[in-house]
Image (cartoon, rainbow, N blue to C red; front, side, top):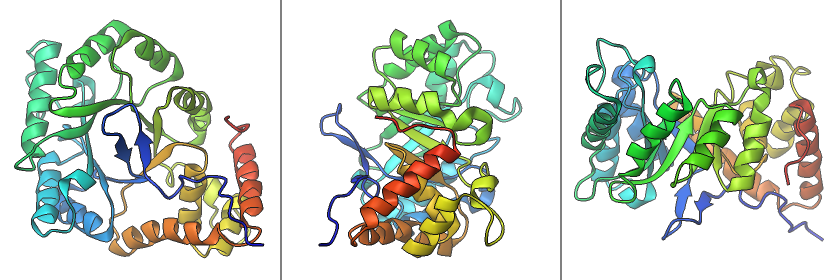
Length: 318
């Protein structure tokens, strides 16, 4: 009899934040726009045309062109490629430590609250989508120098929810700061966006915290930070990655994405500039959904996930 039990039923479906009314959805793949420079508008448009339903940016001109992200989104909306309610748009407030002091969206002379409000105003302008302009998730790009300042920044961000911002998130955070922030604020993080790579132990404690508190873990550096899992030749890399790629009929890169998503409520930043890869990465989710229904595939997937967790030093998170 064909296997019908799906051990990871949401791996190809958006992640649902049920605490919102109506519930919010975060796509499994979110298009990352860092370092795209003058190509940003065209790449965002192509990503949405390929089928991406989430876009990540930041009010940080050093690495992002937020205004060009907005232009790409509006172009896709104008061409009826996608509806605004079907796109998850997330951007970031970046503190002065992460900015180019010669090119930033606020004045360094202003107090913290004014800096944040000015940054948010610039984001709403850059990402405007008439007739209804809002940001799905505003992310604190990194904690500030103290917990007190971090909580103060968060409180300012909270004042925009739910009127022009739907939810809040945080990036580049450690487990101690995450716990302290979570306990101190009224509106809890919906997203934790961190590097997924060996130097942080693949964020095992943070992902456990997210699983416990209904927070979406959003990985970046998923491919570039894990060359040892991918391998460069036929027999190198993690065995579960190699076997999943072969049996599902994808590349190792897509297989790694799938296995990372299989770790739980994980969304992945995908910043490819190759239109073919955009389509292939999204098609990989559909290939998995078709493959998992075949006889024996459920047990095979669970075996790969067990080996993959072992490779990154993780026991199963319940």
